[in-house]
Length: 94
Image (cartoon, rainbow, N blue to C red; front, side, top):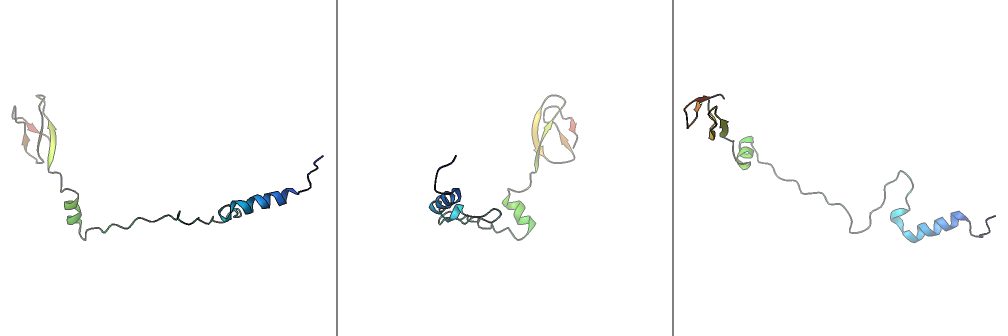
């Protein structure tokens, strides 16, 4: 038989009181934050006003491509519909 004179609910209430307000919330309610632990939202970044400025800030368009020729040469050349291999002169598919 249990012979302790302090009821169980009383002991739990004492423990909760000792832990403080951040842990004494009921189920489903939001917990209170302790001072100094508030989450701060990042400051919004101002976007450039037009799409052209965004492309410029990102480094500009990629105007060179990597090509592989059937002769085994791998080379970078400007993006175009008429690119030929610098070694053998074969036209490359775009």
